[in-house]
Length: 313
Image (cartoon, rainbow, N blue to C red; front, side, top):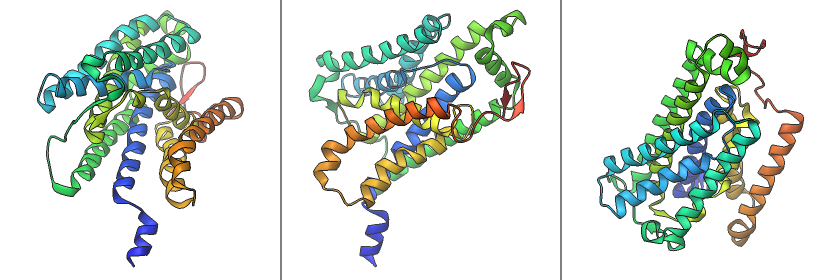
């Protein structure tokens, strides 16, 4: 019986880590859905804000010995401040400018984590970052449950936004900003505020991840996170509330849990070749989706909207 359970469920620690990664990508995908799917802000710097929160929390905890909650608040505030600056920078740029600016921001965060060794430890890393509580061998499972609650609350908020006047304002801003401006809608302020708080939330998710992994390396702050989030959202449907969840299950859950548990490949393949191959597959999948099904599996939003005849849920 134990052998069957081991085959079905694998290592509990591995499953918890895989599930945490899936839920984290769903949370980041929901935030990107608000930015890109509704407001039309193509943020290629997701990993920058997530990584800023990740390392800000680590530095505040390890270097400055702040309590968990103060460090969490500080990391979220730092990511939010960066979101305000970047939101001001990208609000009046065209699509190409937004993509370039946000991608450059992510690169800056990576190089800072790698070069500022006195603060971040550079390539040696920084740790140990512990949980704020201890319930024995179930602590990581409890931490996963906390993230599930947070992402669940975020999904409920996104679902409500689709049915609120604020959601219609975001859609109007994203799909026909000149028309929205002609109707005296505050599109610039709307995009600034949205980008600021969603970036802060990305930093919060990054800070929570710091406690989950306990030790931070610059290689964690790479474009792979951004690619995973974008592929999951585009695959599921960037305009739909459930798009990030569907896409994450079909990408992260499939590759990081199912394949690694049930495909009989040597361990060295999973450790060396598989991560690179996965990023290549994600990139190819993104290209195919943008060419043949840019609205994803779930398609476009449902009910008719007054802006360009675009629909929303």
